[in-house]
Length: 251
Image (cartoon, rainbow, N blue to C red; front, side, top):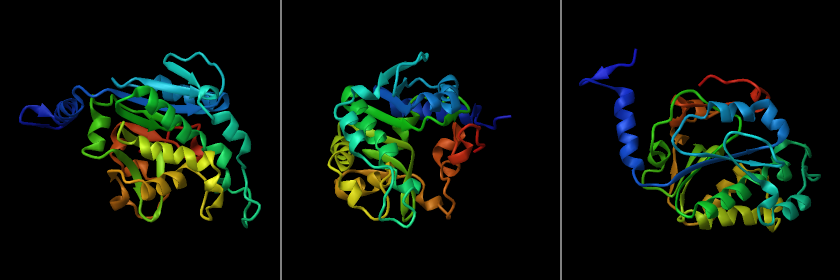
């Protein structure tokens, strides 16, 4: 039973708090997956979605889903950039390690910027396509995660952040989003020695671009790679990792 204080449950009080924070702010949540990803986890992500903020899916090919869909092939410069990106680093001791799969991970910053430019103003939230909504997400929740910042992310101390969730205030975060896309578009990411994933790109962008950023989780990071279960999202969303993408991971 949900505990009640002063005649109101904690859920009621959170709902009122987030609703006040989100009042009048345009919100949108975006993600992306392939057809194989849709079959493995994406359809469950869509079917479980339970929030006032609309969910928009970027796809590699047309699919019928009960939410708005867009094609990654229509994102400016994406196809040209993808064709030039490597999926391994021959100079590394483990050339095919996931950290060097630039072509695989580059789509995120392209989706971030395209969705932000289409939104125009408001709060844009990215959630990975292998997330599942466990309970109704309160109105204004994603606005509340930003508080006074322009970017909110799941930090992991000195390690690169987790990008299963990232929140952006638009248009304030646009310079950061343009920087992140440019890192792939220009090939700069391939000069880095620690990794070429979108997580590495976001970390570098946060260091390079003056933007108000809020790290939601580094203070709770104790060395495990999966930070979502100790994040503010854990009450509402679970996130599958690695080989567990086809299963719901308990938070």
